[in-house]
Image 1 (cartoon, rainbow, N blue to C red):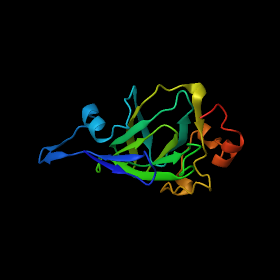
Image 2: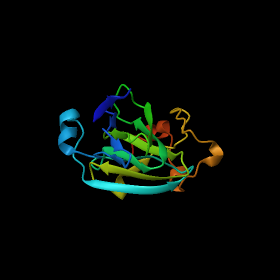
Image 3: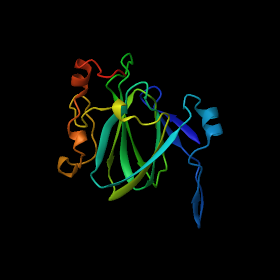
Image 4: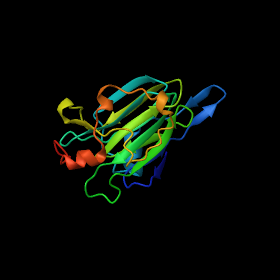
Length: 188
């Protein structure tokens, strides 16, 4: 496994070693011992999630407030997404900046996002099966979000605006500036 740093401290891309032949391929999607050796900052995980989405679905930008903050390790089982992490750590030099990576069933990359980030993804293939590990349990009262198309963030979701499919909840998130102006409601 190769650990690839990104432009934001703590956000990592994991590239597994693929063993393939004419029959197909094999790789370890998660090996706690190896990850602890290569990237000790990656915490233990307590919950695995899976979603299925169609082309154009955009989920995010979501986060969990402290004490329910979550680090995530994300991957695609089938299909292709653009996965995005936005730094919401108040004292970070990269506050409000984002990192994006394409995850697919072809590149087998995984994306590690530490606590203190908003996360979202857009579905670029006809459909996708998306899996991720979380370092903390989900808590409905601790959920929050930033609007996906906040102009200050400047995220290119690789979708035409007419293709974007959002949940009603994701249409109502504040901009990052509005969220900060509200004083980080609920803490962070």
